[in-house]
Amino acid sequence: MEKKVPFTLNQAQSWRERFSTPFYVYDESSIRKTVSDVQKAFSWNKGFCECFAVKATPTPAIIRLLASLGCGTDCASVSELTISKACGLEGRKIMLTSNETSDDAYRLAVMCGAIINLDDITQIDVLEKAAGIPDTVCLRYNPGTFSFTSGIMGNLQDSKFGLTKDQIFEAYGILKDKGVKHFGLHCMAASCCLDESYYVLLSELLFNLVVEVRQKLGISIEIVDLGGGIGIPYRTDQKAVDIVSVGEKVRSKYEEILVPNGINVAIYTEMARFITGPSGYLVSSVRGFKHIYKDYAGLDATACDLIRPAMYGAYHHITVLGKEKEPCNQVYDVVGGLRENNDKFAVDRKLPKLEYGDMVVIHDAGAHGRSMGYNYNGMLRCGELLMDEKGDVRLIRRAESLDDLFATFDVDSDFEF
Ligand SMILES: *Cc1c(COP(=O)(O)O)cnc(C)c1O
Image 1: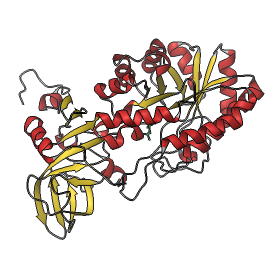
Image 2: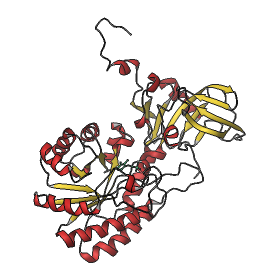
Image 3: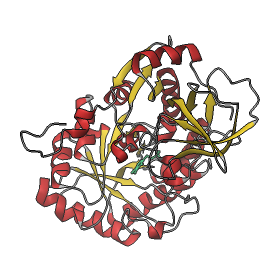
Image 4: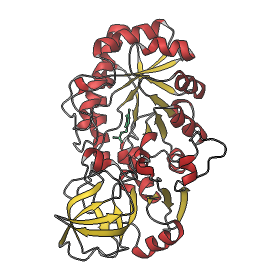
């Protein structure tokens, strides 16, 4: 897929004057378009809800935008639940999918009326003691093997998440005895999967289990949650998933497996990368060069702003603003200023000849980007801008300051920085 930046060098330079690089920019119209495609794909399903995984982009302006479009959220912590609530979400629009869950998270989830997605059979007791058993409970299934398991998630038998099939039956039985009235079934078996049959095969697996649970336990599962995991084409030679076609194929499985059994379920998805990933850009300036055994171009952004290349060796496409038409006849390692040699946004990347101050855009950073930031080497995490249809931006999260970084230190009252 060709990678285009939805703003110009002039725009980026004016933003740099106002906010300084590095910063993230999110393209609102592109997020709206993706959400609308997803909703169209599943419009045949009554009760469909895309619950965006907050961890990917936990900025209230983004969550509020998604909520205004009809999305819910998928949360893993007290802070993610708190953000969801503050963005106006409640009830079945919020999922709590977490493991080693704190009592506080269970209590807040029950208070919000959120759907709690239990990660383990032993959590039934933990939940009961912490917050009582709510009317609605979902279970996270780990099938052990699944043909579309990708690298990041690894072999599902090595995955810490979810219940085995035997435990699923036992847990539904226990929950039914404890008075639970509404049940959900969740499974996430891949991460960043570009194979269009992923959701289709997953829904087949889950729909069959829904039928089996009803036959064996007389329990009607009302929600089937397909989790996240739909990938995006980070590389230009990869193809984007056609979500409308995926939705149609899930519909065929639904009509083949559930409809003849007279079963209706609401489909939930928890896509995050697919929703905001391609709509977010990390914008940075070239701040140095060096030529030793290789050629290096240094940026003012570091892995503290975007850790995916350092953590997973992930590819992120790079555009040099204003040099889109120039030949990519130079080879650079594009690096940040951390004292860690994996702080490289790109290795052996062919780019146009770079100059000091050039504005470099790192693509596909809208999910699991700023949110995975950290403060190693005392780096301050950068701010975030939201760009509207007219190309105007609004600061939706300011960059961190030294005061933010030092705020948690316990120092003597006469200590001064
Ligand atoms: C991370 C995560 C998601 C979102 O994953 P994407 O790959 O970004 O779509 C959804 N659900 C759960 C339980 C997750 O852990």
